[in-house]
Image (cartoon, rainbow, N blue to C red; front, side):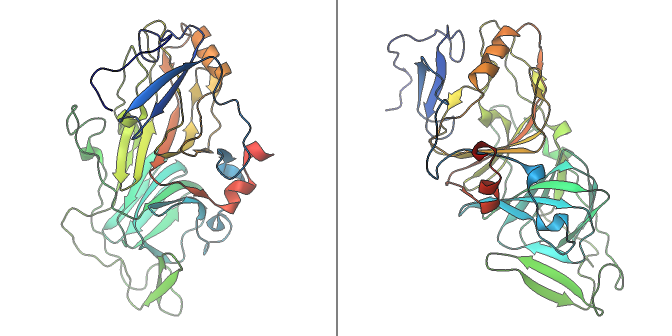
Length: 367
């Protein structure tokens, strides 16, 4: 039962996530990190297990995956994970799309891990660079024109992506939506762009698809638009990180966008906690109600390099967290580092995610 008064039994530290005295900090919590919790203090590392069966963590280097669009201009992104609420895909395109595309099963949110270029959209062009989030509304027509090889983490939500409700910090933190880049209309004349026998292909991406529509006029012919449903970009450099000196804050304070059953977060460089005894690494947990995906954009964790492009999936109910050696090092090097310079994109889903065969075939833990 929820109560303002939380019970304490046995040996526990005075402060939450601090002063562990050799114990292992393990949280069993409902609703992600905002519901009822039990913080347990164990003798042993709860991630020291061997897994047999389908419900197991996976770790994959995205550079080892082979999306169809990496080698074929007509190819499509690679499906990595899916459930009824979303799909998580990987794109690595080098050539301009010889067609236009619409994702008709839901809104699309893409993170630019590497590369730069332009998206031509119905509402106008958007240039992109590393660290950009690109939002594309459901069924919006667009085409990608990479200036160089571009790696995208793509999240398609069945429901609409929305800015999280304003909390106690107000509407401009942890990020100010006014810093989004919104396109101006730039209609393209007939005869320009990719055509086959005088027709333009618009490829509809959907379950059971794709389906292709063919137009004799250029599909990006919009002279003007108004309203509140439009594509945009937002760079993580413009994201305000919320910090604390005395406690490592839960992932929920880093929320960027959300849809029904899907939550997207930015873990970005920040000052390290400074109060002695504070645990600087995320505590062990088994996020009971959510699957978690972490996509490592770059950086280090107190001097330990993080493999760029690593995709890590932790199913709900299965313990995960930084290994104990990394935690011990963070305590030992407490005075050596005053910042955390990681850049990690996180996707939490309410329904269990199903890894694709390509993910299971490239799982580092199974080799």
